[in-house]
Image (cartoon, rainbow, N blue to C red; front, side):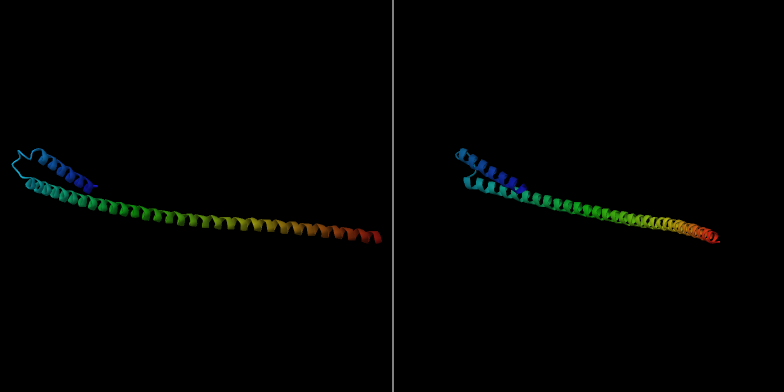
Length: 143
């Protein structure tokens, strides 16, 4: 961008110089060749100055881009570490919850089995008692 401006300045100066030479050719102390040489020197200096400024601007932009890239990389690294910690914490919590759930399920299953066993025992006793009573009645009836 600076080079374009420098080039435009050079063209403007050359045009102005050519116009001035054409207008004042008869009354000017300098010759046309001297005037053109002076204009070329001025254009050269302006171009060099513009190129130097553009170089500095490019260098500054590169430094800023590098700094921004470095900052973004650090932020990404930090976010990754936080996400890893959160994932690890979540996994530990899930493992604990699963372990608690398994213990609770085991206790509930044991209770249900105990109740089922007691009910089967009681039912068997009742059936046995009924059979015994039926047999006693049969024996009494036979007597």
